[in-house]
Image 1 (cartoon, rainbow, N blue to C red):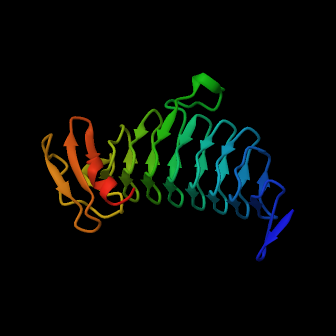
Image 2 (cartoon, rainbow, N blue to C red):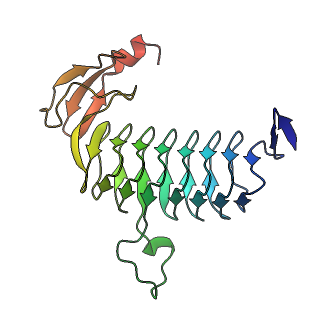
Length: 213
């Protein structure tokens, strides 16, 4: 054990609140697991994650580095969350499209969900399994996601529909959701430039290079 400030770290240099239940040993350094969270054996959590009160991480769930899991979130088997994702309070992730209490499923019989790097899932969002949430996508609070979401897309509502695009800096871009391919736009806040492709939105690499990214 080691102590940093008022926080006592395990020998693997992550923090577990005394009232949390952590059965997994696959947890990266710098991760903080708070009160009444439950991390099952076989769950994988990367470095520098924040796991909030009453969160549940099931066996088979995979979280990358720098993931924030706010209070009341459950991450189930076959859900993969890449680096730098934000899971807002009480958002719902699923892994079974047609559950029955008397039909037991596991492993490949469950339906996977992938949340790509840097995406934001707002409070009380429901993500129906079998979809991919794209990089830097932004899912507004309370949305119900039933189909995959492109990179940088801003979606809201039930069922979720795209209403625009979000920048890396988390500001809405001045670009309609229906903009045609090859349209270019610059973020008025951070000045990163994007182009519309057939698959969604893509960063113009020279703007990142000029910013030292």
